[in-house]
Length: 190
Image (cartoon, rainbow, N blue to C red; front, side, top):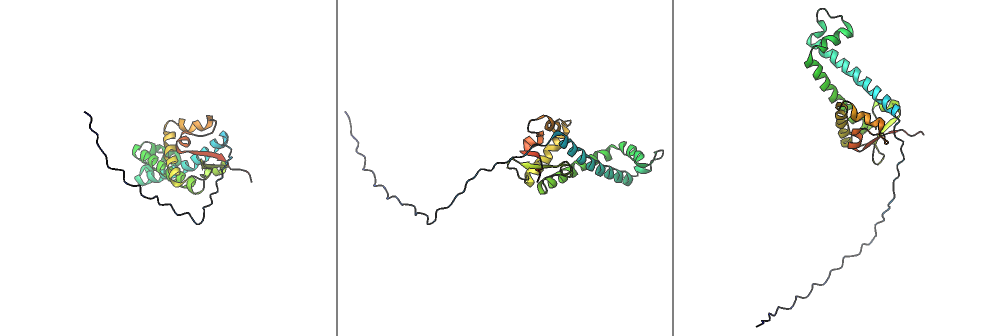
């Protein structure tokens, strides 16, 4: 025996409310941006590293000298005096040497982050005619620049292999450039 079940009729559909037509149609201009930049030549990249290293090295030597004099290591008996005597006295104090290296790493992070975000280049890059840009060809933001600086320190701590990658890749990018999405390019001639 079959039993038939009657369902109530469907409710009438609500009338569709038409969206009001905009009075003014927005104009959208879409255009592609083509960025043509030349990758940094390896010799320019090396020059940039040498200049920035010299600036950072002089700063580090000054910090180490002030630290050695403040702790009394500059007056060690039997030292030859001068920079060589101060350096040999400071080398024996591992705490001073370690704290100076940590201070230098922090100073590099601030220096590179602000230089790249505000000017697009560090002093070494300026001397070598280089500029740091993002994927869009513009100067990197403060956040991207800070991330790149932290990654650059890590690239250097990998025995410099992350940095040397820039000399051998087709795009001329170091490990920190790949990870941060940045490019070091030559400044175009005007």
